[in-house]
Image (cartoon, rainbow, N blue to C red; front, side, top):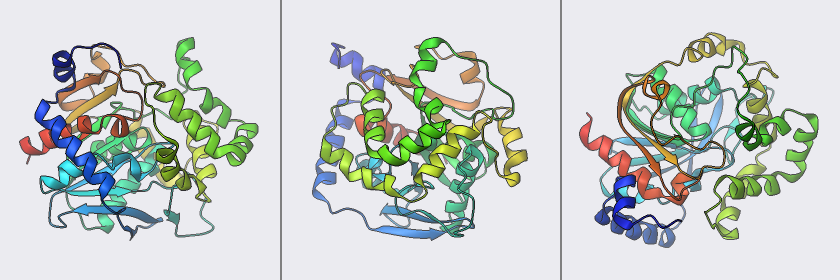
Amino acid sequence: MGTTPRRTFLKLTGIGGAGILANMAGRREVRAQEPATVSTAQTPVLTVGYEDTGNPQGFPVIMLHGFPDDVRAFDEVIPPLVKAGYRALVPYLRGYGPTKFRDAAAPRMAEQAAIGQDVIDFADALKLPRFALTGYDWGGRAAAIAAALHPDRVRATVLVGGYTVQNTIAPQPPAAPAAEHRIWYQYYFNTERGRAGLAANRHAICKYLWQQWSPSWRFTDDTYNRTAPSFDNPDFVDIVIHSYRHRIGNAPGEERFKEVEARLATRPRVQAPSITLYGAEDGIARPPVESPPAERAVFERLIARRVIPGVGHFMPRERPEAVSSALLELLASSA
């Protein structure tokens, strides 16, 4: 981290000293407690593996991990929420960990509309009429989609990386060279060499992406190794490849999501009270300091936009108190 004064840092992150101390205690609890038991939920398409922590009667908060990661991303986000009486639900996305397709013959597709629908199907399977959402990377996109298309279901959202819903209908113009360079892996996965490389070197590639996307995060081998088995899911390679090919038109989507993708291309607004969080050192997309008009336009109620210094792409791991504090702030002020 740089030399940002402590008072300025706390102001930028929106986290007070008491919150930091509480989260330090929460981190000790995470290290001390036994791993949560993995439960399963049956949706129309998937058998979803998930972890369920806290009061079963508490208001549910669904936390969605990204690529390449798994439910361990939220281990240190959960304790403050559980302490406040909420129920934390963390599913493995399709293609990760114990989550499996129910039909062995089903095509392994992972377009954004499918990932968003998985969230609603998961909530339906657990009979959750309303819930809050947080997520980053793939999970952040899924959370934004679920919130935008099902405003009656979503009470609040904390979106790490902001609104990342894609336009998969029209070709997108090329970005600046530096931005294109940062997403080299997406072009790699759009080749058969990339598919073979991910199949043969999935652990090395995923670990390298962690290092590149969060350059200031000094994670240990133990931290990575607790998540790496999730990438051994037999559907992982197909799911990753389809996701990165579909978004630029190099793979077909599911017919049932054709109208949904067309609607997502119009950038539907998220109506729930929302806070967006950005890592100032995110190795994929460096956020602008000021919120651009296009960003503000996609939120009905953007309560706050925070750029967190010294943080890269994996914010729930690098600065969990930023995520938990934002969730608690929204849940305390929304009904």
